[in-house]
Image (tube, rainbow, N blue to C red; front, top):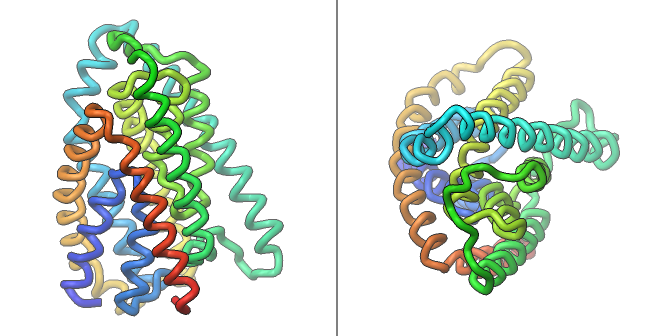
Amino acid sequence: MSLLDVIILAIVQGLAELLPISSSAHVIVAEKLMGMDPAAPETTLLLVMLHTGTMFAVIVYFWRRWHRAFFQSLLHFKSFLVALALAVVLTGVVGGVVTEAIERILLRHEPHAWVEQLFDRLDLIACALAAVGVLILISGWLAERRPEPPLPASEMTAGQAMWMGAVQGLSLPFRGFSRSGATISTGLLTGVPKVRAEDFSFALVVILTPAAIAREGWRLLESQRGHLAAELMSSVTPSLLGAVFAFLAGLLALKWLSRWLEEGRWYWFGVYCLLFAVVVALLYHSGY
């Protein structure tokens, strides 16, 4: 893996991870076009570091907004924690059940089955992109045709938080089903104000990312059977550099996302997902 490959993947990951267009779909397609193996240990390590970079971009970008929205009083903070806890529980339940079902039913004949074994299937990615594209289009269309709910309202109802958490759980096992696209769209469909849906969605990602990183790390260690190969160790420095580029690209992506969401152009991300689904399907039929 060359340094240029790392930088390209970092920029793709940083932009796509925090836009509602599925970073995993873009990174996997980019890896295949560059002749890389998405399941290779050094590629997995790079992906872990890129996720770490984008997580820090989220924290830096949203910290002041979270402080204004959720930390202005003890009452607001408690309400935020309850909503966050409900969403995280539903994410774990839904994501865990769906992942377990895939591994025990669809992959029952595979030794040491992990749902990640399906992550490079471009046919499945195309379907997931199309599904989230439709969801974004519907939520964007409805959000622009009804009055925007008032904003002090940092408090979300239990139902709204649980719906966002459940849909986030559904996005975990399916590459292409954008987490941010699905959760923000769900918030909009349940009546959450645009800015609050964005704030809460990315608060969830800060909770989710360390668990995702830990799972990837554990899978990496298991694949290496307790020892890291020399080639893996040689990729640590490039992966750290990739994390820096992913962080910078992530900040840019968040500014773009906030502007388009607040200006009523959310549905354009849905259009993009549908178009990219067609591209991915064509790549699949071309033999990638």
